[in-house]
Image (cartoon, rainbow, N blue to C red; front, side, top):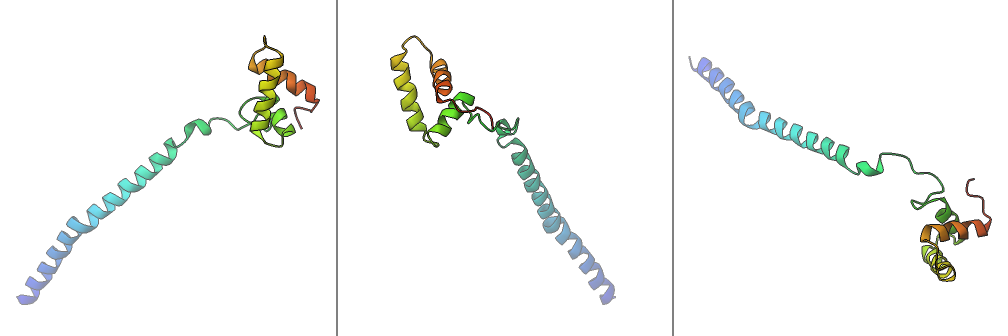
Length: 110
């Protein structure tokens, strides 16, 4: 009789242990993994919409050509643009950048 009672108590104890400890831990792990997947899917979607072109440098081909001439020094390029705008007061910034890129005679695509 005692053996049946001990076996029954062991089965009840195992069931309660699974119900209160194992099952909630699995649910927490599943929710955590799902949250991680959702974060990865939402992270930086604007950067994943299209590949970058090689020469654009995010500001246009002409600016990229000037940036190559300045060996990556954006401050030097900005100085050139400001000086050219002072020399040509009626032109917009984009037009000045295009004119400067044409003056450098660098090929815009490699």
